[in-house]
Image (tube, rainbow, N blue to C red; front, side, top):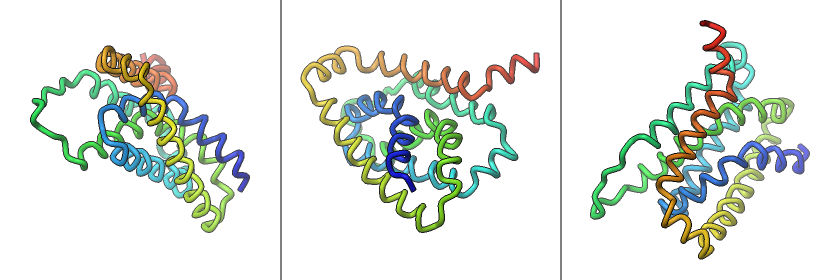
Length: 188
């Protein structure tokens, strides 16, 4: 396995999610964000390795665009928890996981499939270790960026509405990029 290609692939397919990580790191604890993100990465990489070809045979890429409804729902869902109520670690990890899967599933499955297709089980295990290390480094760097005073000021002032706009935009992008919109138009 060419680790440069693997690193470049990981960075390119997750680049759009790095900005969302800033929001998530402002809202949840570092460990919760890291765990949810890491579980999502493991799920998508394993799916790419084990059943990617099967998914391509039975589920067209445009159908994955339906996942775009998840970030839109999260943006429109009013979170009216009062300040004394704390979210559990479980729900925070699950929120990060669902956010990651809804934003990155199509891209990751489509792009990692050819990269991982020729790997042996041992190479795949080494790939998962490499990606785990890369994930920890990325979340740590993004967390450091999120702690910069200018980023903190912007996030405190505009974070919630900006996050909602980004979630709606990501949902729309997932609809468009997956080919779902084109598919729906062709049916009309």
